[in-house]
Length: 96
Image (cartoon, rainbow, N blue to C red; front, side, top):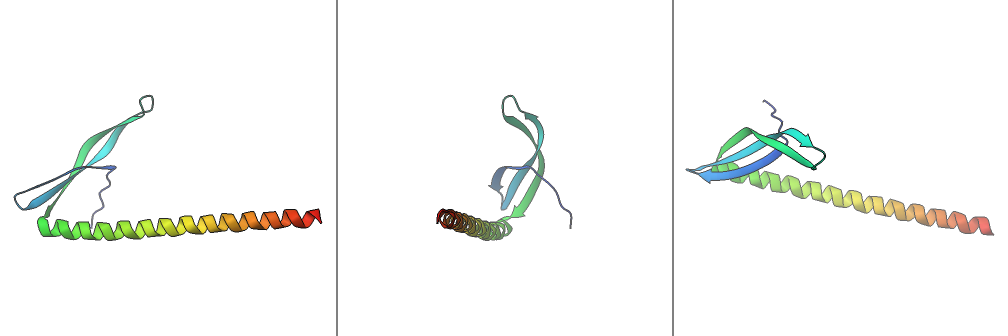
């Protein structure tokens, strides 16, 4: 299997029973204008049923990533809350 790296998804078109997904690579970065220049680099062509399967898999992956992010955020917030409570307890214990 061959890996192909792309920086951005550019567009998607469908015709004659196939879906074309165009991807691009960043060519230049203009820090003054806060803009990037992207050039087309790769096109993936899939039959319609292959594209539908791809989208199903992508949605499942997105859902897992969002769930992981949610769990990570909740865990981080819980940890911060526990640390705050612990430091408050230490502060009140030193007063006595």
